Length: 308
Image 1 (cartoon, rainbow, N blue to C red):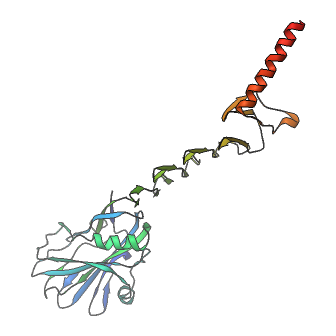
Image 2: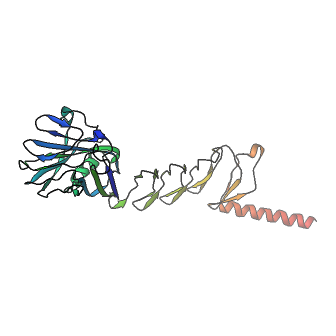
Image 3: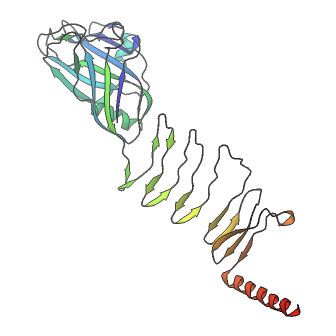
């Protein structure tokens, strides 16, 4: 799966200079007479728990031509899954960075309006996913810190204030996978579907809620035993169901609509609604008892026939 998220507001990208200045309406990375650090904030990043990050990188588009010597950057993230927009120099420098960091060193001369992809920062994104149990509509920050660039190695990418369509873009590709002892386990599928999926855990099928517009539960076979579950939503909750647990018939609910007979472990519905004091009546007969009942009925039939 892949996601692409672009900086979405003026306060979501900026840079600071080692002199103590912050620039909220322009971006510089690398160094001139001073050292620069760029910051890029991306909103509503969602990556489920247990995901493996396959690749991730920043795409910066050159807002000005740039050459001269080697740019050396260290790319890190902010250790925060709800990072705020940038405001002051103290705000920028006071943020905690991830342990993971990636070198992005290049000598490429930048050409205006050309896109440049950073080094792979999958370890940075993976750290955030692992530390926060996945990312759900998270706001994350990626830093591009000067790491001993040459004195005149400076590059100027577009910022949001200059171009809303050429400002920094974050690209992430990930695989959703969860495994427990080699068996598949269920996890939430987020986004538009908003639901859970069923899971096969250790070879045993288990039920999970299907949420959202469907609003229902499904029946499950757990260890080979069938259990009934309520179907909600537009149906009236005033209902009853029968279930077989170990061959025993049980009833639940406030309305009994059928007389159930358990014959040798099987369930047979007969008749229609049972009225009066028989409302909650359930007849249970063993196979042997049922045969005796048939034999008795046959004897009475013969007697009645002879009397006629």
